[in-house]
Image (tube, rainbow over all chains, first blue to last red):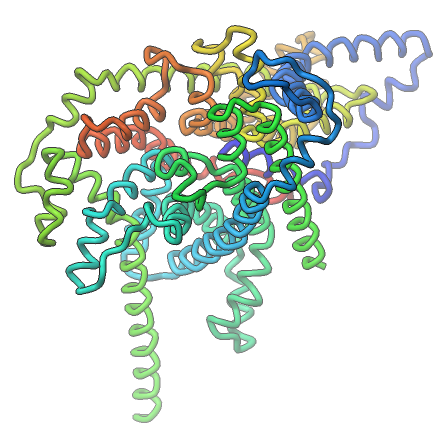
Length: 329
Length: 289
């Protein structure tokens, strides 16, 4: 969720106009003063600003920038031996070459991309359809909205527990399949079904979460636009495409970027339910970085996987911004 | 005349039918989402072995318990000491909100009120710095925290949650909208910058402050990877991890796990329901007017 907030901040600076300041601002008056007093004044403002900003700046340096630089540096070193105590030496891009030429890592990278290509559009499309459905005047609408909303208050740990039990061989989902006369399925313990099962775990809580933002966006659309559209003879389908969708551009871009980041760093269901298996079928970059660092005690390779993850994710987020921004014109 | 009325009636009939059809669809979607949660709730109120035991043969009994009990909750809060984990989560959440606001508000104030060279640069560094997703640097950061002996401490759990780029961003945008005349008037009256911030700006900024507090709290409450990396001592472990640890523990039963999962959902559920309008109220989704 934190990733969500961070990315949300990313796109705004360009498009956001700073409120205009009155022409006769005190700062302008200040500039008219003689040089020395002004310089002293600027110096004092600097000091004051530094005092107000220092805690936040130190925090960001300490918990984001320094560790990230540290991680990048450690990707350029290798250890002769295993574990944190082994001697480190500089090795250039050896870690990157090793990882990117490893078929297992290539498969992990491909799987991470595939997972995101499927789950992000799927979650957002469903969240959008449900948001539109639940903002129509249907009977007991508030009740159904609450029903979809409830799962998104359950942390991923809770969702993993629920589906971990529900999808067991002797669990209720297989119970339902059996009652319908269908063959039971292995779900999380099958290399072909585990990834889809993980998507279910993430989507049960994710769809309702993204829906909240889309509903807020739909409620912001002025009714007059729909009235105008219906006067022009537009039906429900037409006004969805030419009113709802264009007016939702901003929340949709936010949801798309935030969802992409959240799914790129998805970790809980793999750690709790599959351990990346069976046969690595649910190993994605985030889990791979964790496993290399803590299970295999290869922190340099783990950091390399982390840096690759960050770069790939930022490239995709950047492309999403460009595509949707272009579209707006 | 008659033709017109029947025409209108059939049209009204169609609209009504459409409404009911959409209503039915909405009900179906709602049930699909809420059913697993109801199954968890009812499962937590029956003996743990019945959760799976009632599946075959499939009947109403699979969902609705025939034996009702609060034993699961009793053992969660009794011998399993889940209460302690919840308290730890609350301590971490509230401390993070307090410290997070304490660093974000002055930063946002400085970035919106003071005019000094390099202001835009500092702002960019803050926002871009927080752009790096926390999960991506969690592993290297955890190694640093271990070297600094911050592992297995509350401080270690709290620190990464207090810096929140979006909180600073939202507060700054809001402060920029406050007329600078108010700032000048307060300064002319002899109030210090700190006093101006707390007495003039903050009372006007309830919405972005609640929004920021909510962002920080919810992020900490659902944190999983970070506490997993820096805490191994059960006495200060947070609820999410305490719960997941029991998942692999075979002596633990499903009824207890469901109860624990619901208990950790209650606080975010209440906060989101009561404060939903603040949660979606961010410049990113609405834009500035």
